[in-house]
Length: 181
Image (cartoon, one colour):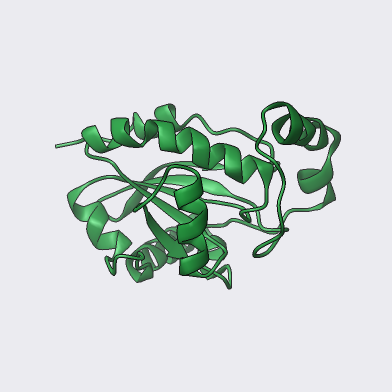
């Protein structure tokens, strides 16, 4: 698939995605930038760490006019429970149990090294036990890789595609590329 086809596929997906509030992600991006965060399963320590970090940045991004929207692998109601637990109550999110949007954005299933490589195992141990993020049940596809996209006016302006499950995006750097009117 060439870059034009990928861009079209992303654009189509952006305008098909509907949040738990019934709003179209593409339409939202026409009036304000969207930080679209594709999570792993809710039992993942790295997913939990990302939610906690973003819960701390949420108000800052909202003041900048940036809408934070999560994409997850669970039913919407299940997502609500986890977001509440990580101080993200009433957040906007999209349920993608079949990983269709993940695939549209080029987010693949992880291979052994991406999921269980030495670096990820060591970081996973640290996140689980030292940082207290814990580990839980697989809710969704445990092989699905995450990613982050800054979308403005229906187009991807910046992205971070995880090479391993333990990669840590610089969310502030990602949102710095957008122009807020």
